Structure formats: structure tokens, C-alpha cells
Length: 358
Image (cartoon, rainbow, N blue to C red; front, side, top):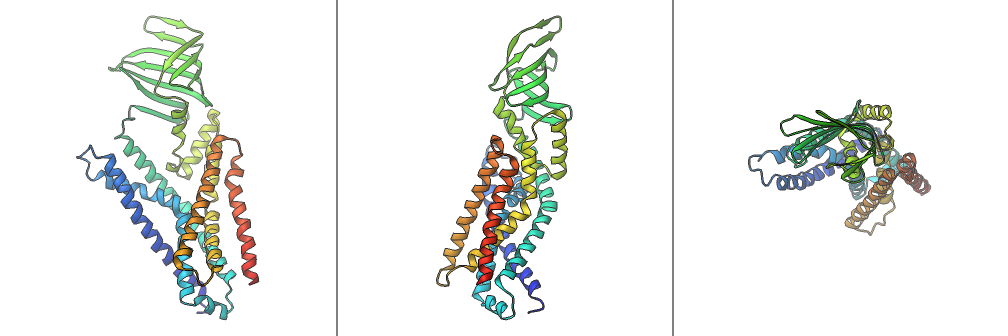
């Protein structure tokens, strides 16, 4: 056992993780399936579609809750190890609690790298297919906004008109260098509006110094109101699905933003969140280990697991809070992403020193 203790810990920990992951997969499958069935309740012809969409969505959900899964897996690892008195057996052979935690943390960090490099890229592409497929059955399929190397493009149906809108730059609640091509329902060009700036805070846009070109007329205005289904809030929502972009697409999108002069802080923040992912998993495992190695022997397993769940949920919402702060731009994204990680890391180090002194 002494010679193979690392292999034994790897195997035991991996089995615990697999069991917890399987349970969470089953729960996610059931909950998400009911949600998709409810979404398609008026489309009886699409019986298999809820199942298909659920399978596409599960990997991205797993990626979000893996920190929670790793902490719970760690709790079960130590519950089994303590119940079988293996902790004391390890100590007899000179394998300290600190050594066990180091092995688990390094293993988790390595698994985290694999999850980031391989699993995330797969899950994000499946998420992209999921969103693309589901959007085909939503009532919003008449409205579309995308960012390309040629700027921001919008397809917007208003009544009997179809508007194709291109803007070179989006900054706060303003579009710059705007071109609006308006077609009728037979796709005949009605008019083209060119404006240096458009305020999109509300659905009634305010166009500044627009030039309106129709078939036989061209007119200039100081200001002109233009109705759209898009406003500032809805426009910014197109940047909320970064989780559907793999690492390569994120980098390509960032370059497009930089070329167009868009703010890249949200993308940079999301990338750093991904880069911190292996460390985050390792920290969660260390927290679970410290929690179990400092428990009182007379405390029940249910209490230990419940305490672990509470701690993981609190940490999750702390991270969520700091991620939301990025969107407000009140705090630099580096501080929002790495600040909580560094604080948790210092707490872990302090507790590991205490464990080593026991």
C-alpha cells in the first residue's frame, strides 16, 4: 500500500467524483427535460426535440457546477476514508493529511486543465448548437443581432417592414456610423437611412444628422426618431452567451471587438474566469479536505455534507457576485476574477499550515 498509495488515492478520488457526477447528471437531465418539454408543449410534432436539446445542454451546465461536484466528491472521499480508518493507516506509513491534500489538489488541478482544454471546448460548441436550434422555435426569430468583422448587424422586423441595420461601433447606449436599409414584405427596398450616431437607450431610437434616401428623394434632418425592437438592454444581451463560444472563437471575437473599437472587458473577464478554473477546482477540493479533516468524530455524516454544501453554495454566489461586478465596470475585471480566488487561496494556506502542525 505504501508504494501504491498515490495510485490508490487517485483511483478512490476519481471513483467518488464519477459517482457524484453521475448523480448530478441524472438530476440535471430530469430537471432540464421537464423544462424543454414545457417549452415544446404546443408543438406535438417535436416529441424527440426536448430530449435532444437536453443532451446538448447538459455538458455546459456540468461545466458550471463542476466546482460544486468536486467539493461534494471530496467530502465523500474523506467520509469513506475515515470510516475505513484509512487515514490512520496512512499516518502509520508516514503519509500525513497534508500530503493527501497535496495529492488531491494536484490531481484536481490537472483534471481542471483537461476540463478547460477539452471538455469546455466541446460543451461550448454543443451550447452553441443548443441556442441556435432553440432560437428556431422562439418568437424572437424575426430579430437577430450579430457582430462580425464588418461591424454590428441587425435584422429587425417592424410591422410590414424588414430593417437591416449596420453600425461600425457600439458604445454605451449609442451606435455610430449607422446604415439602415428598409424593405417591404416583398423584399423591395423602400429607403436607406445613413446616420452618424443613433441613441438606442429606448426602442424609439434618436438618429443624429440622418440622411434619408428613398427612390426619388433624399432628405437631411437634424434629428429623426426611428422605432426598433432593439434597445440598449436587448442589444447588450447578444453579448451574454459567451459560454457558447470555445476558446478559439472567444479570441477571434475579441480581435473583432478590438478592430471595431468595442469594449472587450466582458470578454477579457470571461477568459480570465476560464483561466482561473483549474485553480478554482483545486481550491474547492482543499476546502472540502480541510472541512473533513477538522470535523469532530461525533458529528454525523449528514451534518458534514450539509455544511459542505452550504459552504460551496456561499462560495459560488460570492464568485457570481464578483462576475456581475465586471458588467458594471466599477471594478477592474482582474480584481473581480482573481480577487476571490486569492482570498480563498490564502484561507486554504492558513488552514493547511494548521493541519500540518497537528
